[in-house]
Length: 283
Image 1 (cartoon, rainbow, N blue to C red):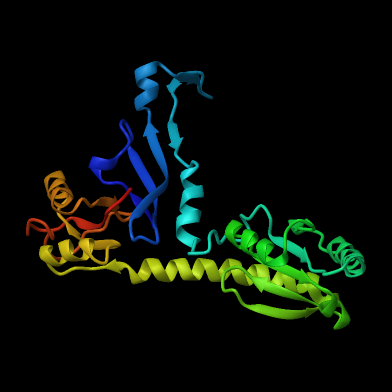
Image 2 (cartoon, one colour; image 1 turned 90 degrees about the vertical axis):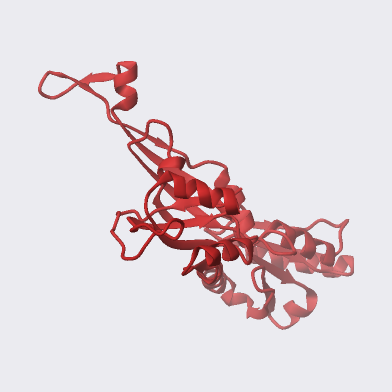
């Protein structure tokens, strides 16, 4: 989710602060990135000015962008499963791993020749051929699943006899046979499907764990179990924000990007609400 930060969470000196909040698989919130409009506060304090077009000195307008390695952690915790990483194809360092399968030197020579011809036609994709002889195919399958490579291509003698290869998806584990002549276009389609599928799955998880309590007791219960984003009217007072944090360990993760008055009363104190706030327990 994107939105403004509450007063208690804003960056010191910021006129406006916006945040990117993600909900991880353990139903905790992660602030993955922030942007701060600092106005002229720091320029005024440190005397940062420039000569404007009218020939007059003007104070600089400043911004600060907090997009960092937290995004890497967000990807891991959002998409990973019990078998390791599941990387979106657009981000994956290796999009396709090709695993040649052979039981004899004769088979190996044939399979490697076919693999070289196959990968020569996979232009535009980030491809790795795992032709290590010291590891069996099962070991390689597990290793590349752990690393989260989106698609595995298996090339064996039986595949070649049928003029096909086997494609395995990391996100679902599904396998399919693909004619050798159609591998390049099918990989393009498959990577697009995986990208969309991972996004849709993460979006469903977030929406399934976004709640709107009717009472303060319900807010506390939802934050304790199952956890997630809990959206409720808020009066705008920092004291109510502090009360929720003391009772639940949750903080306001974001406010609407454009402040909008809401009907009803603050979930924490019962006074007229100023806007909606989203609470969650964060790292």
